[in-house]
Length: 169
Image (cartoon, rainbow, N blue to C red; front, side, top):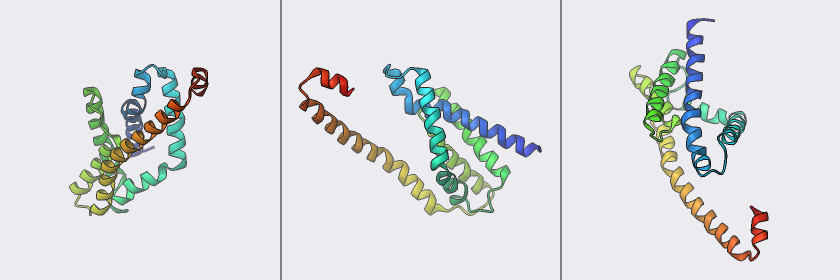
């Protein structure tokens, strides 16, 4: 195995560790902090659903980041390793500082940085779509959470029996 392959595998594990230490904490921190899930339950839940997500639809995100920002043929293995390493270092720093940073945003930034450094053409339209999703996603999630909470409150307020509410939970 050549040095580049070893570096790619090492950086892949480093990014995976970053995702586990940062993004998993973002997803499960509230449930663990509130005592709803134990650390072990949260870890198992994240492991199951991360694997399912990667297996079922993860390739679409990889395709967008891997070929959509910098066109195919411009992003070499060396450039990918550098982009991922830069993203990993930033996510590690942010995680140590307790900043809620997105690994995806860091990786996209790393790919753009490598593309700009090598004078590769950057697909700004794809980047605008990605950035729009970053802005729209929390807004839509907030609206959906509000609607779901109102529906939940409406349903619970209609139930008169405490035992029924306990059974529902």
